[in-house]
Length: 245
Image (cartoon, rainbow, N blue to C red; front, side):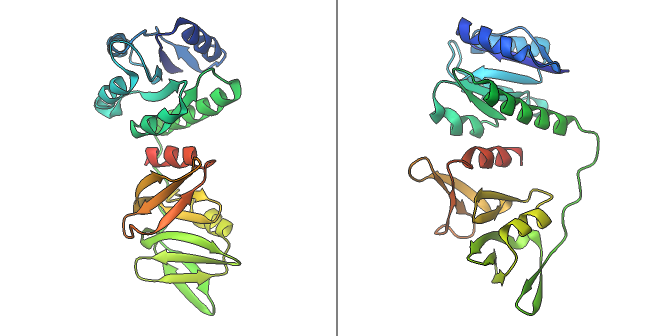
């Protein structure tokens, strides 16, 4: 059973979330907290696996409580932020949150959130060894066979019928599709797809900056001038993947 705690000062919102979570057979609901200080005391007493936490609470705000909890051995419990304001999403992910929920709660969105919670929980508690990483990538460039190491690939971009793979030393132009690249070489999730035309090596991402109309840009460590677009529909997934690395 996954032990779940709710930290919410609004009684109606807390009751609604409790009702929804009680419908899940693998969740065990622990006593709820009405403010940040009470939450910290209850965590020490009950040791929850996951906390659904309001961003704005009396005594101590959820963001501060989450920061304190993350300093615990093992990183503390998993956090899902609950808020009526979507602009808190980036702040939530910056505090190592698994996900965030907007009020009023939607059942389908909660199901999606719980799927992520379960995946993260079982990943943490899995006893099996992690899958070995991929040692090399073999691609065709014209008549040449090019061997690349995944760690050297910074990003790949679609260019009409070709894929251009950028490394620190060269660009490789291949007729491989971006989907083939992703399916064949991304089994260790080293690359993420922020946009339908791009794949980016997670280790080469420096920061994510807001752009316009809810979209974002990835800034690379090696090339501060290059901007890789992050679509509005992909930003949440991108942040979630980065948060797990």
